[in-house]
Image 1: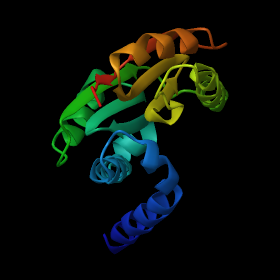
Image 2 (image 1 turned 120 degrees about the vertical axis):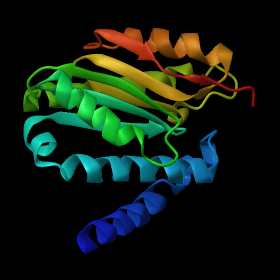
Image 3 (image 1 turned 135 degrees about the vertical axis):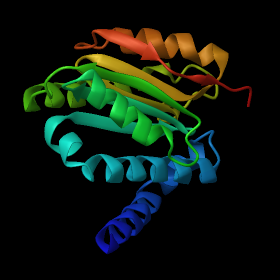
Length: 184
């Protein structure tokens, strides 16, 4: 348990140092950004703390504005339900979006391809510099087996251009929009 506490503290310190610049452009409060990082770290601690989950699944937990997105592969519906139930009770989690699929864990090649798709999608968002007030760092992109999940606090007029640009990225099979709309 002491190791887990030290890991959480060190991870938090590293995160706060690396994300300081991005937080300036974020529409979330600094407290929300820190809370999201905490939710992700606690999720990983729970997932890696259970042998059956750690050894038999590939699960990603991404939090944005206290909405926890679960992506990846699990071998059974029962294990998927167990994971969701464990993470649903985390403090400060407003909602769990369960996008876990019943399948064997994805291959290294598939995960590497998803990393490339995510990178290409982030770069593609730079082309939207004509939209007044738009900042591509406000869009959280998660890719899993060619499915791209888009999270963020966006203004209504920003959403459609973001989706259309990401849809045209090579390797994207489907786009799932999980945005929250803001007026500020």
